[in-house]
Amino acid sequence: MARECDHANEQKCYCCGGFGHIQKLCDKVKCYSHSLALGFSLTSMACWFEAGCQSLQQKRHSRSWSTLRVNLLYQLFLSPMQGIASRQKKADQMSHVLGVPITMDQIIMSHSPLRMFKKYHDKCVLVSGQGPVLDIAKNLGFENVVSIDMLRESFPLLDMVDHNRRPKLPSATVGHLPNVEAVILFGEPIRWETHLQLIVDVLLTHGNLSGAHHSPTRAHLPLLACNMDLLWMAEAQSPRFGHGTFLVCLENIYKKITGRDLKYEALMGKPSELTYHFAEYLIRGQAIERQWKHPVTSLYAIGDNLMTDIYGANLYNRYLEERVKGRSHKAVAKMAATTTTTATASPQEGELDHPWAGELALPSATSCKSLLVCTGVYNPSTEAASSSSANQHIRENVFHGHRDFRFFDPELVEPDHVVLDVNEAVDLIFHKENFVP
Image (cartoon, rainbow, N blue to C red):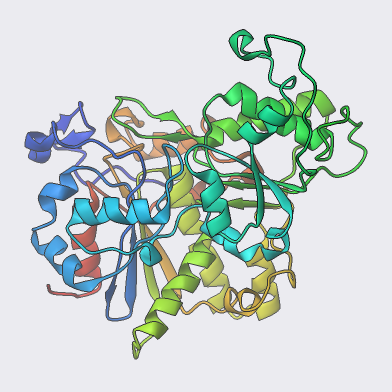
């Protein structure tokens, strides 16, 4: 069961979810609009760090962060929680905060695994989100991309919720865009009603918005979604809606209209195993590029969200344990590719283009340990008073994970360690790896 923070008996600071011994930092500890992820090499060990806060800027000259400056290897799992940013923008952001040079090649976003889905790269793809989604899609390899705004301009009669945005005069459909062949959901958009309406229109017309809705007698267009966080922690006292909330709306609207479940070709971002496989694959590539003599075998995932960071890390660790026990490469590859038992497996075995098919099934890692920090979505002051009641709370009352992870295993939200913040997590990992900075 998820145990209480090691500092549970100390005086808590309720303004930031911290504790007495960091109360002096309370006016500085505010979560960024994204999770922070770092990775560094300690012999044959790589670490994944999430859940950043501004206090890291003050701590970056401490023993742990000075060591990071020397040993920094990889920047992982930067979930774009407030808009969609480019890898270069995230790299610049992290370089400024940590005082460590970080390039965009060291950045993994929740949508990064889309590079593997090459069978859609030449299709006409509709993208949803905010920020430079067209540029991001093109950088991922998609050649024919349209946005919600482009659809709205071509079909002005489809967006009717906001009376002020309705056409002032009778308007004919422009309709010069090609039929949509797949839909990619990058992150929470602006004007949810417009995105929800047009995405449902695309699904129910099978990409041809010039026509009327069809009866859903066949499978809808391929749908790929990134970033499943229901909630995320910003500067407010309570968590804010994430892209997972938008997905809940889309799924329920589609089912209410059609009576059928919305199916995903793939779900990316935490806690999807696919994201962890892609990250581990890139870590191996970095190790080879740097000519390390020993492979990366131990992974540490640090995060502030039980339902994404911890669940995903533990799910991936379970996969690694199964592989170590000697399951066949074929079975492991299929397990890695399958999002859930209710979602469409993606990418299917044999569908990945070279070199992904072989590489994703052969990780060098043998374990992935999860560490929960108390400075973000997880706030000990709002959790159940005891570990037993907390476990019952998780089992009976709360499931913030995505719908397609409905076969919820409470053991997967039990972190291996609970620490105060990222800095304390670094020290704990140093201790466990017998590393002396």
